[in-house]
Length: 135
Ligand code: NI
Image 1 (spheres, rainbow, N blue to C red):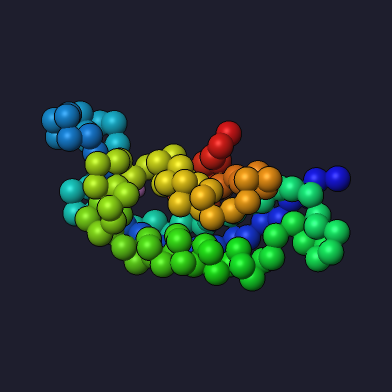
Image 2 (cartoon, rainbow, N blue to C red; image 1 turned 90 degrees about the vertical axis):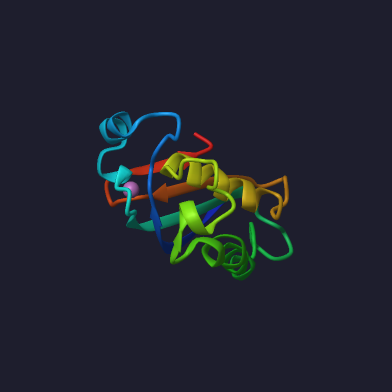
């Protein structure tokens, strides 16, 4: 029987959404407040879900201490209290929408976790807006 385990983490980061191929008027119209040229912050809630078989010897799907360390090393250590547009390599040329942040987080973790486990990222940008990757 497959079982899912979840680790919830938190980070704060600033961003600005814009498309450099559009003029200011169109950026403002499409991205609204998230287009603020002086940036703004979000309190991101991250949920990492792993699904797989329970290991018969440990009784674990995945060691949660290891998962916690991995998320800190790979994700929160990289993005917490950063300006995503200015301070990170990942968003130099990628619009830091919740959709794109979730995909970047997935890619940063996927290579570190056994392929036998399914990985899903849920990222809350606000209490009411969140994304799931992969869908
Ligand atoms: Ni925003």
